[in-house]
Figure 1 (cartoon, rainbow, N blue to C red):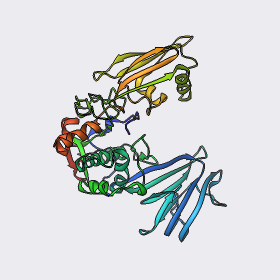
Figure 2 (tube, rainbow, N blue to C red):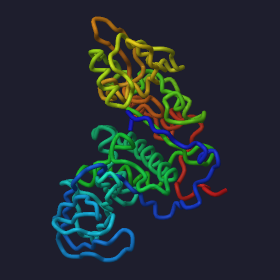
Figure 3 (cartoon, one colour):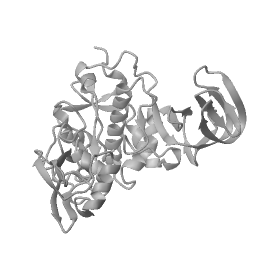
Figure 4 (cartoon, one colour):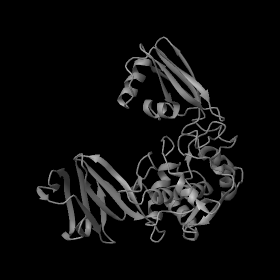
Length: 385
């Protein structure tokens, strides 16, 4: 999640309630595990049913299955058979195992043909089981139990907020860094499952209401205001940003990366920006936490200004690790020397991990990185006050 700009709807939080169609009961999360692919390999070992998404009609059933699905004009092609429907639901029995492109998942799976003739696969599963597959992907497996609990509370809070935000969409979250990395059943680990179970139902709230508990790898000395990071549209006290003096042992605390200007131009153009060739570029403005606000690109004809958060994502969030950098251009090359990894908002994972080793409790860590926040049980949050 740390490398993504997510535009949220603060009005939902400000109202102190969710859309009328959303209820906490069940807490089933819809995760887009495949999106935009031309084929999907499906395998089920054990009893299963296949039903039409639009009607619920039973299409197929059996005790084992291995098939490749592809989109076509009439609907979905099931192996060599054409199904004149836009999507199917795969319902394995409780003891059955389901795999998509070789990856195992819990719950049920919807496979839909999209208008661009690609497939969308949505995994429906209990929020707690979803977290089993998130924690091992989001933090190192050898970190302390307290840090696993911190991560479980944050990941649960973020996912449930996204579920509240998009009740009428085809899915709630993606399985990538565009939401939270979800690895499915095969990536689960025993300690992570135990941390999820110990914190079952616990979420982070502000003034009694769920809010998006952003987090990232390393802040580089001070966390960022979520508004300045481009993640949120209004000031919210827990997301203002705080000093962080404990992440300096992170391997990502300091970094350096150089790009040829022509390479940057290529990447920006590929991301949809009107950039042909770059004469030079410079950083303009800093946020209160020391992160660059804007990148000014000088071309042969005119200048282009791009928010630094967008520039980073377009160039490469894995290489350009944060917007907290100094920029130097010479010899046709741009050199970035920076601090931290991620958007910088919310909790700094490496800083929080150091705090657990210093004896700070889960509650103390969360209240430090999110001032004014409170841990509550999810079903008891007053959505419709």
